[in-house]
Image (cartoon, rainbow, N blue to C red; front, side, top):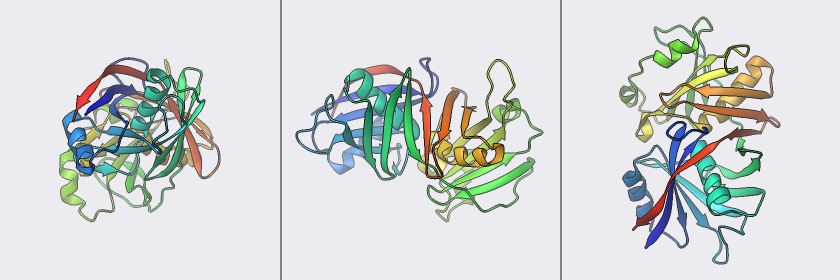
Length: 278
């Protein structure tokens, strides 16, 4: 069987930046174990599988599809950048005629729509709670999001973006200290400098998920589903811009519609198109 496969750099308008995801289009049902084997073969932080919900569905005409995400080691309940990549493949490579696409996922229905040069994702807005104190780096706040098991750690406002970028994080050691299963991702975040030049950002972040086999993820939509709610409360804003400070880097725009949903938008670059033999 030949599967169409694409590599898409998400949350960037430059090739080889942002966060790369593999996207596979499934014309027919795929053996369950093949999802994980393909994700391991692609060896990216996430591989997305878009499937037809009905035999008569069409990747160009239909507006609703199933969507699953796999890291090289396991399936995950939500992945923003691979959802953005999936929408880009349908809109730009399959020329889908619909203005809005709906994906049926483990996190419920997610929507993607084209707005000028961006693709906007409609994701759940995850709340955070549980304050604590940790570490030798100065910490301003700690929150926990139980919905998707992410721990948010806000660094002191005295630090600048360069501190977060250069911070050494031994992510491979984290699973040794957290074995309860309550934490599956660590978000480090820092207040931005909205008046800064050349780009003004409301906040910065980095994201680590060694529990899923991802030491550091370049640009993470699901983490920003947590960060959006947190920074909206802290800054008193509904519209925000953010930058994830990985070595590849990526820019995201967020718009909170209510206390349940957030639109996260970004650009994409499709850098590879091919067929996978399974």
